Amino acid sequence: MLAVVTTVKLLAEIALLALFGQGVIGLLSGPARDRNLFYRLLQLVGQPWVRAARWLSPRVVLDRHLPLVAFLVLLFIWGGAAFAKVSICLQIGVTLCK
Image (cartoon, rainbow, N blue to C red; front, side, top):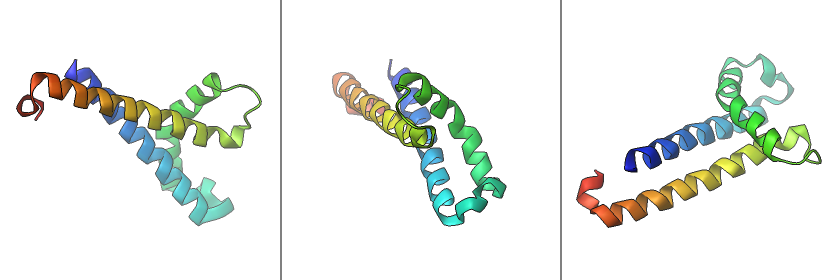
């Protein structure tokens, strides 16, 4: 169970960092962000999560807000996985969690 929780936490961290990096590069490069190679690479990593956010959110949410929705959903998933990992580690012993 610890391996599953750790894997979920790791996947959420990767997606969160990709969405955060995409946002920072988007702010820095402005309208030319679509020509930026790193922006497109991070967009490729974050795109499945943005699609999942579209599926989860109501149609009232604008498409330009979907990366923020995906970021917030992933943040909650990461928080839940971190809480679950701490809980499991306290049950089995902290030395076994390393």
